[in-house]
Amino acid sequence: MKKTFVLVHGAWSGEYAWDLLRPQLEHLGHRVVTFNLPGHEGEPPPLAELTLERYVAATIEHVAAETGRVVLVGHSMAGMIISQVAEYLPAKIARLVYLCAYLPRNNQSAFDFPDPDSLMLANLVLSADQRTATIQPAAIVPIFAADCSPAVQQLVVARHRPEALTPFQDKVTLTEGNFGRVLKCYIETLHDVGISTNLQRQMLLADGTVADIAALDCGHSPHFAKPAELAALLDSI
Image (cartoon, rainbow, N blue to C red; front, side, top):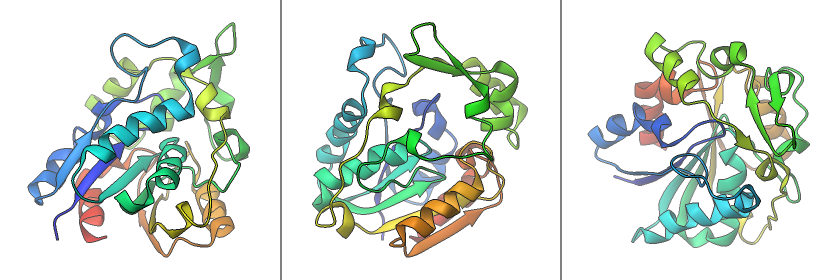
């Protein structure tokens, strides 16, 4: 059965993250919706407007515009976003897919996940006002594209921009009656130093409700490193 996928990119990224995956899914006959989260392309809104709720609202616009239910895919930090969207619109979500993503419980933020095996925190560069952050230039490729082509590695370095920190600090509000009744799938990445493989497994154990778990032999950007394999997994769910 053909599906509608709404793909939500992670931090320090943009709609371009799906450029290799999208044609793979479309070739399989699926409808694919991609977009830039607020502040990630073009003229950014004021920093005060860049909150988790703003990201959620932008995602809801695309989900609600579809006539049927969607498979909502969130990469990395977007696990927080898709979880809150499912809380608000459970009837519109056929399945949530966490792609090496944060898998929160109620009242958690992205900063509530200790991850000593990740290179992310050690390489954060905070702005003077501590409202945005970048990644140390030498760590961008090791975190996001170590197993990707030279062209992709150049792309992620060239497109790296400051990321607002408020969405990482904002907590989700999730209930069993809404979020809890949406089917969930998790795709692990076995060599991940962004959201480490170890943390991914800890989150799955803590959650205990994700019935479908798959794995890809790659780092933190399977949409770049393994687009055909990722498309086949998504096609099969």
